[in-house]
Length: 118
Length: 116
Image (cartoon, rainbow over all chains, first blue to last red; front, side, top):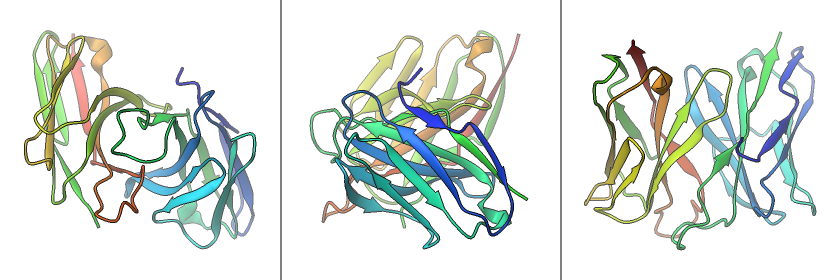
């Protein structure tokens, strides 16, 4: 158990709908990351938050958005869903947000949310 | 963007054999990490490497951070059936402007099958 929790475990929805994925980081971790895992693209970085602020963006679609709340949990919102959005979505957390420091930025992954868009 | 090439794509070995897999990149990284993922679960961190040339062990696992900062390898000694899974390398942070922050770039994964 990494200490990172994600809900729900599974989500089945229809095209055009909107869903929210939730993540609670490990106790004390300030940084949260979202990744998408699909068969054709592998594990892809979406977005990072550090202590409530957006820190880095990856290949995140405009239909997707995220935020980190004062209690440090994070939500990933996916809207106008398409069939191709079906994937595993992982949240990870680390103590710090910037590499180059002496440790504290190793990322620990949650169990993921499997999204199926029908 | 940055690309990681991980090889081999898959390995079928007998229990007790040693395993070696590696990752190469077109860009340098400040940190290399190795993860293992089992079906239906998230990646689990195995080893983190912070300095070029560093060699680190975790039980039967040994990993090295290449001198050029563009590659890393993972060895598993005396494999056992529970080693089955997908192993991923990941590189972290080296953009000159620091804009990549904590982003991980992952390899495509090595699928390991161990026959008893």
